[in-house]
Image 1 (cartoon, rainbow, N blue to C red):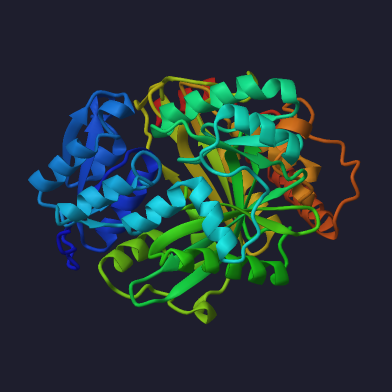
Image 2 (tube, one colour; image 1 turned 45 degrees about the vertical axis):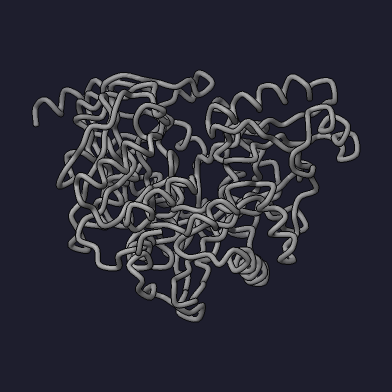
Length: 506
């Protein structure tokens, strides 16, 4: 293996979209030059425009461009970069990619290949967590054939989850309620896993009913410092895809935060983890938690942690890869202040079963103002194609309290205008109106089982004390809006046609 450089002047970002833009900005703030890569359809993309250099790597399908290790390493050599940042998705959790970079004498801004490999195999990761004394969800052993999985399912009991061994992100996952549905579900999961990760291996886990999806952000450096940055609540999901994330979690108290944080650190220590990573847990109604997986990369939802801790996670990734000590190197230095909420803006139609939407963005008005951050990679004239993930942008709102953060998010979503295709902004607006959501009475099944675009909830559940304060603030806020008569109420919004006309006049 070649020696890893510790002095960076140029970084290749092996990704696209909003995360590529996010990493480029961090690099530029640190005085680093950036090399971008792009496929045919991304020639005019924002990450290409922001980079100092950009290189074409192939056709739109990821297998011909963003998943081609050889092409990316070739660009890295030709452009004489010192390091590669993989972002998330694509090659971010491929140990062979990290190893290829190191073998080429290029630093990899992420964990070491052996840690990626250990945590990337979800079955092996479960074994590591169990050996570290962290509770795991009951499930099958690695390497079982389908007939053995079907036999094991009877002992586990239904409902159960089929999961891909080689990756996460909802790919290759299937919930099975009845024994007769298992054989066909296994076939679908095998195909999905093979298509997404190049490995069709799956395993079974018992479903923890009524669970919350809580994850712990960790950071480790080469000096032996390892800390956690508190939790994120990612329970609002649809088909195992996260939609809305927040930090901290209403469900997590100080004692549970401390226990889960220490458990996450035990998992990280077990693989000598360096750089940024996330340990994910399912937490049941009795606040018993179970190891789910470890993501060996920066997460989509990392901004909420950045806002409540004041730590720039991407800059710390670069600092750690340079061999330096991270900015907050002891647990005592980590403090959480305020509340942050993130809404993922996807090109999907929430009124039509979240059907993906493609087309050209004809107008793009980004919200701003106090406490609002928007990470995005799109612009007016940007063409959304079917080749990549539907994520267009992330709106992140921060406030001193959860109520204040939700109010800012409501205002930001009211301001956000994307024309030319469908987005899930109406879904998020409806969710923020849901009494159950405001009260924190939700779990991972909430969106699919108890939420409707036509009915935001009757508030029949007993509200927690915080909901009264939130609702009172919302009522006062709405009254002030009506008194000022500056804009229309959101239940009678300004039409996109009027917005388009105004934009032409500007």
